[in-house]
Length: 124
Image (cartoon, rainbow, N blue to C red; front, side, top):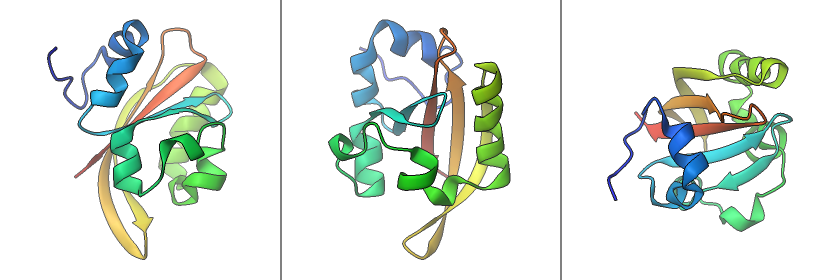
């Protein structure tokens, strides 16, 4: 099985066909519904964020899990997905994590059905 690199254009299709592959990604992957609730939170993101993935499923990503992600640009791009069901944007972002700014690359990519959006996170 080949490694899926960060920023792969058809990653949404790959994960739609083979959802278990999200666990083997070498970067964080969070699947959000259109309201921002977490449907999937991979092990890599759990290690990065210091969270047990099983404890965040069903919770509001922007209000409960990562309120630091509510910055205008990041959250604004998610709100576009919320309205349209479409997203495919990469951006540089700085999270405030445990009192320090952490530079990351974010890839928001909607699934083909338009009901869910992958949030891929890679430390910059």
